Length: 400
Ligand SMILES: Nc1ncnc2c1ncn2[C@@H]1O[C@H](COP(=O)(O)OP(=O)(O)O)[C@@H](O)[C@H]1O
Ligand SMILES: [Mg+2]
Image (cartoon, rainbow, N blue to C red; front, side, top):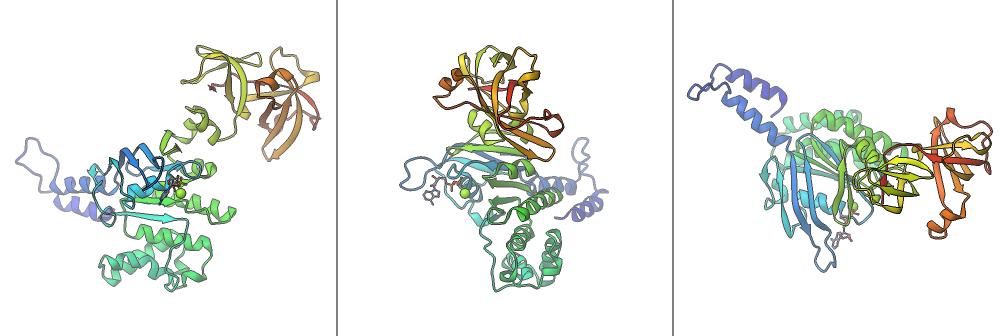
């Protein structure tokens, strides 16, 4: 049912209120619309899902839990082999599961076969029919479903327009660039109005520029269509750019799931902290709700480890850097500038802590500290080899 159909249905039935129920103000049609949209924009619930591949020593999904709101875009982020594709394939019904259950729109689909789950998947491989035109590829799924030619052509053209390929409709997909082929694949997936759109590293085979362009467009289209979407990637920048929420996966389960900014500012584990953005591991003594790092008090995040000597995970922008000759503060550690990276509006400065004490703490390795600051705040005359003092700011951090 399209939005226009829904409106028409409500308008048509608005005279015939159900009057046999106490104070009933809901029409049958309105109720149908409500049910239809809840079901169509299906929320997802994966509960205690285990997946064990035949002969495998460990579980590919290990008590995997995931809740997604209707219309939400959740990104599953994690390194190779952590179970991202398996989670997606289990949700789609392409893999049987050994434990747990899967609900879509409140309905248990655990035993529902793949072709009845009403989901569409786009993966890294283009998987289009090369001997068909873009239009024929997009129409294909609708043809299989028995839709009449005029109707399926209308829908296919609508989806090609959505992905910006109206003028390429008659082209054979084998003559198209990788980026264009993925647009066709996306249009084909959306043509069947899936309840859930599954994207498994759809941009991995594309070059950097096209990748950024298309990821922004996927997000625009997803917001426009309101399709509940699960997007799998190993690229944190991609995840941060498109997600409502990111689930960071490790060993077959989600270690933390939160909005991008929350995940960055309040990582629950070291794995999450190091997977999203850069982080320094600095020595500190923690006690209760704060730690002392290089003489500076740093508030600690929930779940922080306590002890006289722990590692505190400090983001590069949560550090200050002062040339040693102008330093007047009594906190901080002396360090030598190793490299300076200009990143446009920002500058990243890699330093090596001078004191051998922290080298011992760091397992014999020199303790490196990366500081990031606005280019406008870079001390004049700072150069490779400069003696500086680095100190954390009082920004909440995790101790591990
Ligand atoms: N068809 C398969 N048969 C056996 N083991 C598999 C199969 N597919 C994936 N695995 C294993 O399951 C784990 C998770 O794989 P996968 O979900 O593909 O990870 P990701 O997509 O995060 O890279 C890995 O250890 C992988 O080797
Ligand atoms: Mg994968």
